[in-house]
Length: 470
Image (cartoon, rainbow, N blue to C red; front, side, top):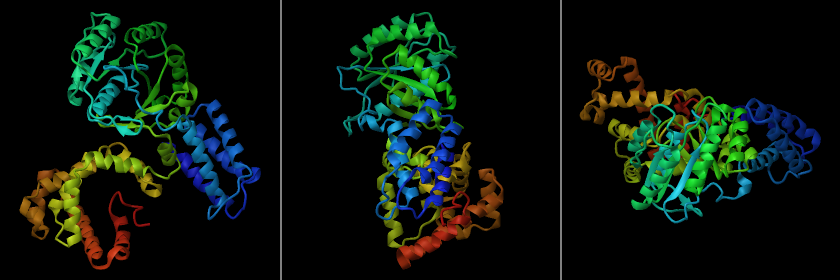
């Protein structure tokens, strides 16, 4: 997302080194680059103008302190203003769902058809059911969640939500295309109360464009349900069109927040910067993959750092803690530290742990600098495909072969390749990577960090690790 902005800033920073103060002259070039990058990212023109003006006011005349260069100081100002633009000025709790009401807390999902409302309803239900919700910065525990669809127009919309609810392991409340949306809403609310549900999420109908009938219907549903949260779901691919849609929904409904979907696609990211400015409401979630775990709470400061190439290590660590078996990780770390032999069984366990963390491209995007740029080379599921291929090769080996890779001669490699459905060269490549990992671990044991870093220089030859040793 917004790769151009990061690259342009990096280039311009180099041109204004060694100056003691940020002036109109030495910020002009950078502001031009920032403006172009934002426009290329499909950010709405009024938003670009307001943002550039804010940065100029804050930057010009600012002293460059400590070891910072003028370029770094200006990036700091841009970072602060990007954070504010995406909702940082609303405070850390603005992005939280307000569920501290008499149960069931009703969440109404609004947006155009195709924005991803139904999938997002399932993702959000799963997210709440797994205990990820925070209130004033603290986890509030697992929620008992029910979902219902009032979309009686789109073919199979109700069945789609039923399927998604089953995958998310939350309660699906039955509805029918012969019913009126308001009747479905009242019946669902009554059911949720009787079943002591903590949260009821209501999926609504959309249209291909802004439609008066749709707006009247969703206003009626809002009056019927009195939701504690009304979330506007918008497709990141819409770009500037998202601004018009956001304005229309913002005028019709008292929105409480925005969910930006399909951020993992070819979107240029402008919607993330535009929608909050237009609606005045915080971005609360972003959809980062089609999988049910592909929903992340939105943090303006973390997203700003990712845009500027600083990475988002905090979110990466949180994701690891949520999905990785820490006991297994500790066991492997102890084995490596003690110098016990690291074999292909351990390698396979590592891959299993990595897969639990979710979509690889979204993980790589959270890494800073050159490492994050590797994500661009792994779009379209290439990272997932490579992981599955590697796991298939390892699963085609016997437990003894994984424990003793030296047994793997030509005939065994052919059998493994056939079992995994890959060429023998793929098996050889995997074994070569494994040998490099073993060599690095031996250096760690013998000579500590310095030798380990030297060994890591060789990892640039491993596919997908091109910039790691630089």
